[in-house]
Image 1 (cartoon, helix red, strand yellow):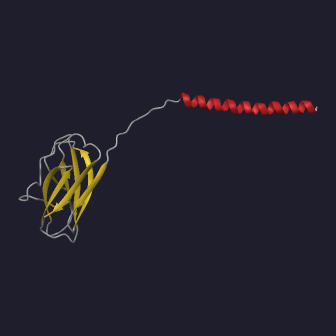
Image 2 (cartoon, helix red, strand yellow):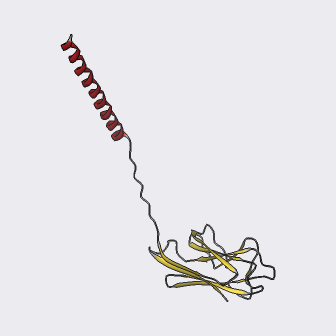
Image 3 (cartoon, one colour):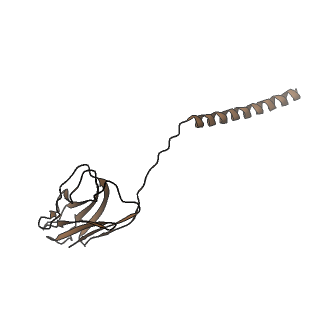
Length: 167
């Protein structure tokens, strides 16, 4: 029975290797049978940005987005500035479909009351604005300053921009 016993062990070991080999071949066949899809993504990069603003104001970059609708200009003249309130918007003339840069200006308790500021946006070498905003005697709220960059595409990457808020 010794030879029969050894032969059955060899067959059983070989059987387990055959099982493992069949399992691996099956897994490889399943992987190659699965559909593989490839999608590409385009990314934009900015090489640098500068935001300058006076003490008492906080400025937050809200980025670029496509304008869904056209909007007439508001707050472009210091004879009728945009004032800080809830959801106030000052903007250049916006054309539907153009990219718009948005920067939010918030007044803090240390902002000078009843003071006018010009908000200017520079993209590359092109200047947009200024928009005129004014703090009130009671300081609260924010103003979204929106600049139409007059293009349906963003500039070639990388690009630079600067926002300046000043008297």
